[in-house]
Length: 79
Image (cartoon, rainbow, N blue to C red; front, top):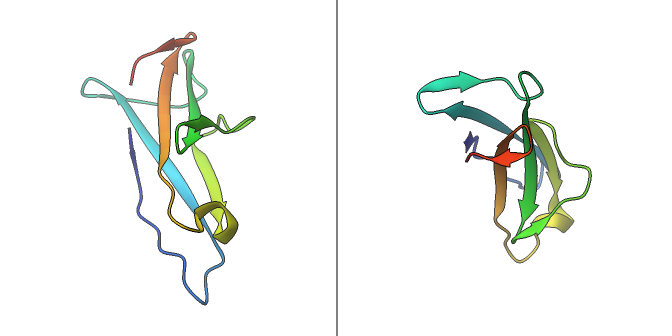
C-alpha cells in the first residue's frame, strides 16, 4: 500500500491521504472482491475509517503522527 505525501501549511488546514493497493503486482480496488482498508494513527486504529481515503487535519498531526493503511481481503490481513 502506498499513499500520497501531503503538506499542511498556513493555507492548507486539512489534507486527504489516498491509499493505492496491490496484492503482489496486481492492483486491487478497495471495496471490491473482498478488499478493505483499515487506517491507523500512531498504531491506534481509527474507528470507522475503512475507505481508500483519509482526511487529516492540523489537530491530528500536531507534534507529528504516522498514518498507516492496512489491506485486508475477506477479513484477513494481506499488507
